[in-house]
Length: 360
Image (tube, rainbow, N blue to C red; front, side, top):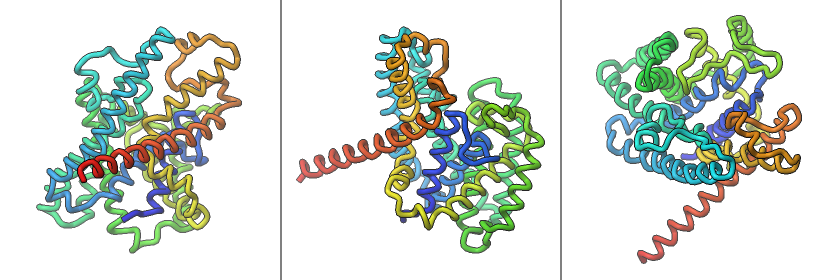
């Protein structure tokens, strides 16, 4: 059943991802890189259907169709786009073209193409959910106490933050990311089944406590720079945790704050069509927003008569004159990437209807 609050939470989450790539924070004191990926794992756990614990085949079929098929279609599309850009700029924005990089790398570091690298989350989510189904199913067979399950997954997450110095190969990187993420998948499941309708944690008393905890966590921050305000960050995609345990705590405070914001804003935004569409198209936004930002920068370079070759001096996240243009990039990127998803879904529905009509 469609849950509009969770859909709006997804919209907030994807805005946090885009704002993080533009190096600003939508929520003061809660920078996106301190929790935004954990938030999406949490949402996946909230939406998790327990029936899949006894129907792993059905689970894998469904997730392959909804996650991996679009992933490889986007990879093929951006491979073509990257070749075209390489012809124009002289730079190939990706890894060397090999079987490993385009078939196996998606399940390792998922950075075979710069323009689609945010989709690393999709293959990692597939891996994390698959391992979660297996481990959670085994736990339920031996222990029925949900707090025991909670402690097991929490222990795995905490341990993963101590393994950051052991990222000696891509396999170990996946292990670290999976250990960390499974806890937040379970947390989403736990919140839905044990907290949401039973314990009111989204109130002013909790707000004060979470803010107080966040203030304390800032004392441990190692990478704060006043210029951009992005601190307390950890880089899950590369398994980089500056401080053990802290990433788990900042993820918890960030997820709580996100839930609180949605609760407070829901009466005012529940009927907003654009936000609803944004939440329904997070996959497409994640896939396309870097390309849209790339195109915006290209337009700025053209308008200012700057040769496109200057791009070679910067990474894929580079934006033109960020002091002036950051929020413009954010606005245009969210609009275009959201409606790219709306358009692609419309085309897909038309094609499906055509196939049905052809069969009739």
